[in-house]
Length: 160
View 1: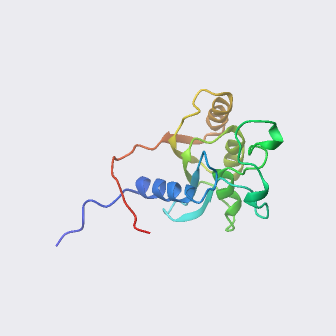
View 2: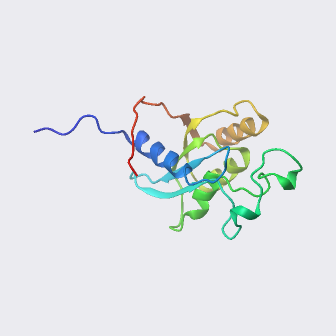
View 3: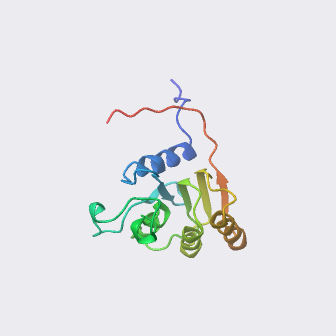
């Protein structure tokens, strides 16, 4: 008997973990998950967008529009940054980040400073916005490789 041929690729696996992590987000509009992987294809950390530890979800706004302090933007930590901050094992130098949405310029700074060298993203829905352009410019300058995940068209159903 030979091995099974329809197993998922590493990119499918890690993007799947990122997307599954995003389901932990309580944001009613945008759920972003991230997964950091070492050179040996082992998961080092995961994160999703949400409020910082100790900041109850019920005490902060989830709104996208209104006065700045009445929106989620000054309070939410993005999935990429949470994955970086959740890592407790030392250096992230040379690692790969899988994320369901292309990083903003603020997360790009943290990714670069953490030493992450490759970003694999699914959606780039903010392509062409100032934040997106700045993130790509910084990645290019810092030698961070980034590429869009190529969906295999495979549907995987989990019975949880």
